[in-house]
Image (cartoon, rainbow, N blue to C red):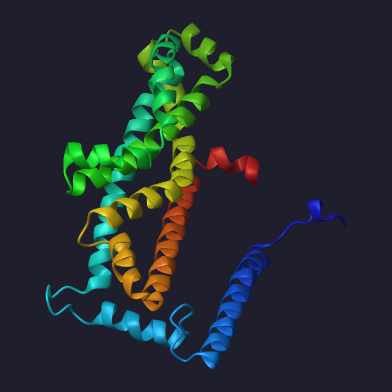
Length: 271
């Protein structure tokens, strides 16, 4: 049987997915052990025990100055900023994308503007955002919104604009107004696409968040990573990076389950 015709069961899929991660972890342990055998003071590839010890202080011991558990304070701060940014971007993408996709005059008027904003590198706008909004939370959230909202708007608008013309004609024939067309025809089909766009935007959103926290923050996952890098504290940096990856995977999983639960009809083609 050709590989393109093979069907992978759920259990086998989990096993195959975990195999590269296990190989990567084993390779790291072997490389770290080899470096420490040659130089016990090596900081570039810390051993798992050293990472566990360093993280234990951040996870379980309060900071002497602030009294906070730094790991959890960093996580809460970053997730709060990320959640606000994703929420505002998602709402903007839904409202603007629907109107742009369903109403040709609006698309012709504002479509080029959205495209022009979307091609601007968001990191280049970071100084402008800090000057405009200051060094507080607003600028960090704004960077996430500016970074991912234009892409999500274009994706949703393109999906709505590509809906079969027959659906629009039938709705208009039955007496639907433009408002009813948006709510009854476009909106239900935009929702699964919106979640898909949000999933694709998670990676860039984390990049913008870490960048903003690295420049102007006193708490957060990105702040902590860039704070300890001056000490070459890879025993903290690597676990933090792994934690960010785990959070991103968990959010992606929740979005996928939500989409399949609420809009199962949109996923039937993939079963």
